[in-house]
Length: 103
Ligand SMILES: [Zn+2]
Image 1 (tube, rainbow, N blue to C red):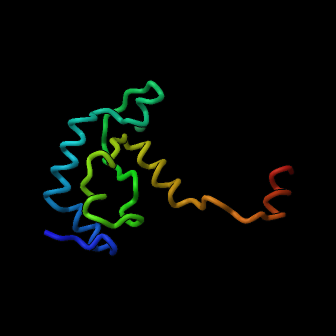
Image 2: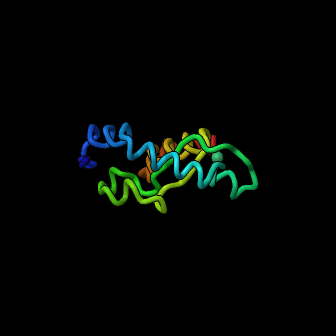
């Protein structure tokens, strides 16, 4: 089975595949607790398995299936990471925002 990771449809069909299901279950068994929370001394059950390197950025089968490039996350950490990804990392300087900040 081959997947075209360069397209949204290809990535979706991978996420629905048996192979991804098996990888997810294996990773969950390895790290049943959210790895992010664990670093802060919190214990939260793993809900989602996250690709450290986004499949959109590195659209290869190796990146998609390499256990060492996956991280176990709870719902709240996964939501946080996903939102950070969507948010602009760098915003051009804006005088209005600057003034609002100090008002
Ligand atoms: Zn967490």
